[in-house]
Amino acid sequence: MTSVKGVSVAMAAAGAIAFVVLAAVLVPWHPYPGGALHPPAADTVFSPAQIHQASAYSHAARWLGRSSLLVSIAVACLLGFSGFGRAVTARLRGPWWLRTVVLVLLVTVIGRLVTLPFSIALQHQERRYGLSEQSWAAYLSDVAIGTGLAVVATSIAVLALLAVMRRWRRAWPAIAGAVLAVLVLLGSFVYPVLVEPLFNNFHSLPEGSLRTQVMRLAAQEGVRLDDVLVADASRRTTQLNAYVTGFGSTRRVVLYDNLIDGLPRGEVLSVVAHELGHAKHDDVLSGTLLGVAAAFCGVGVLGFLLGPLTRRRYGEAGAHSAELVPLLLALFALASALALPVQSTISRQIETRADVVALTTTHDKDSFVALQTRLAISALADPTPPTWSQFVFGSHPTALQRIALAERVLGSGGGTSR
Image (cartoon, rainbow, N blue to C red; front, side, top):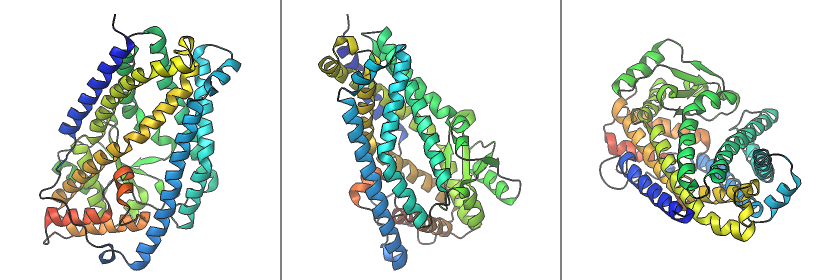
């Protein structure tokens, strides 16, 4: 009979191969012609005061964010690789699933509490630099909602994993991989409908010239667009943003209200064309499929590691019980941190392709460059972040790289606002 180790190795290999193949097919590794971009010097785009302010804020934000991440991983490992799970479970009563949820709740809340000082300090910085319009009460409400959502989502995933492990002792990695893949797909599909309304209110972009132009852009890019939504983000932030979320019948293009109200029309259309570029290439679905492959690989690696870890710490009796929850969450935290460079690299390539689509659709280099400059200033984005930071955490190209991209795609002639 096939062992758990054998199934796990096969799962990890299959997931890794699927991820590489999907990444090769779906990710635009060469989204623009020519070789490497040559960004302009920061002082040719931004004023000395803007560079100083962005550098000061970004330095503080980086320090707080990286410290929070390291502390969260350290605490997760402390709880996961110690006797915490066994000690807490020994005091709990009730069925295994209830003890599992309680442990997920405890680990998640502890992790949130130890990182809350960093989060509060970052919120203070955002208020200090005028990036946040959110009251402290609203901020704490968002923290509570986010923590609750994390508990629910994590509980569903862990319960599914443990249920499969308890039912199929040898073949559980293969079955758990399939179950978690379904959960990843389902989560991406329902997220826009169930989660996003908890943080923002949405309304359709009103009839008028802007909506007409947006629909015309969608037709140019071959994107079927039933609606464009506007989020009331200005009550929370001064930063400008737009995004595409969901896929299939839940796919939506969302614009921040302050983006529509505060930008010239050409820049708004440049944002819309970028987001439609994501929709054109089904980037949300591509990311979801990559997540499915990563889940298969991760479950395989988990099955390979779990045997020795559980035998050494919990014994065979604890190998499929709620005691395992802190260890599972610790391994997930480590895996998530290790995956950051891969996620960021893929994201930057996809964002670059969406920029190319925006430029070739609008033929408006002036608005694109003005937009990237404005977005960087409004977010106090560091124009020249450290290379290591951009590699590990940078989900988008820098503003200077995007300006160089506009030069590469449209040339010095460029275009003008419509």
